[in-house]
Image 1 (cartoon, one colour):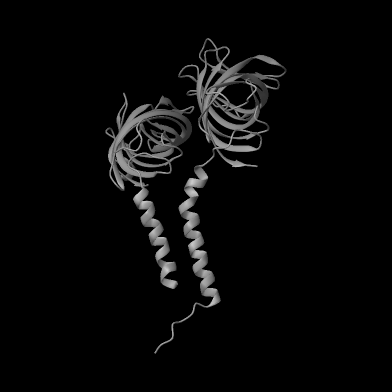
Image 2 (tube, helix red, strand yellow; image 1 turned 30 degrees about the vertical axis):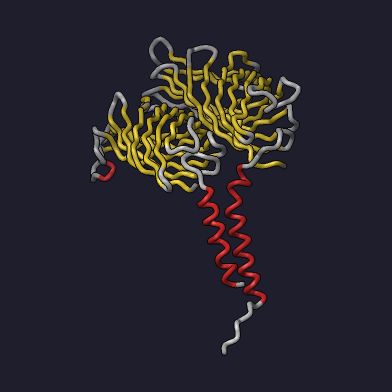
Length: 191
Length: 217
């Protein structure tokens, strides 16, 4: 009886495994993390990206994404430097919204989404005393994204492009921080 | 010969609990996602939104983001309780930030109510309370000014799945209390004007939002 009780969850797991579907389907949860580039007129930004999505139906998922800005090509990782540079922007974003997946139950996934969110912006500036000051802002953000993915059993490869509109707007500075964020990476999925 | 050990009562209870939890965990995602019942009163949703804010004069345009919850009263009447941050600028010199909190009642035009058609148009009306801050680049920033507004508008609802609603709405916010206005004079000096009374020069708010219904009260 005891053995049977211990084996039962295993059998249930195996039966679910046998029923599992391929690619995007209702109930799928996918997690992905990678690094990405933000292309803007002003600079090229470097991001660490984390993403979580749960599929409510065969075509629709609710997705949440975070972008942590490490720096830009003008000031590579100067957040770790002893003396940060002035006139330097950082933009960290949290975006959430629905995603539409065009293909279902097959390895290939093509998707499209619109996601609102909030960005934490940072400006390093040179103050009157000649030192570098820091100013933070919280900015509403809007984004639209598209991407493709290829699903294996527990993992998927993906490529994604997302346009994000936001702005650092304070009395000191009023600068749009719009960029096109490109990411390629490996994600994991719970089917 | 060693006698097979019988499961004691507490141990059996423990194994039973583990089994029940396993079954519950395996079935939970499917149960949570299954919302196939028709739309009616008492449904609760959480959502996020983006807004495009256009002021009646001065050409000030802004982008907003925020969240809301929705609680339906009947299949034709839904309520939305929202909070937004809207950041606007007429040009590089004027910055405006509005913190909105408010509510609206949405009345579906088709008799079948929300989710009865692919796209359901609705009328909406409500109230909104604002905290507004205006800044002039390189000059100064005003303190937060409180004002109240009444709003009315139209919208379209689309249930993309039984539990996920997309909304596009446009409504006019007419300030009934204080109205905050920012202007630059001929010398480039910024002035903040706070007006009392009914001000028809409010603003249009066009909002795209999504809501996930996950609870039936």
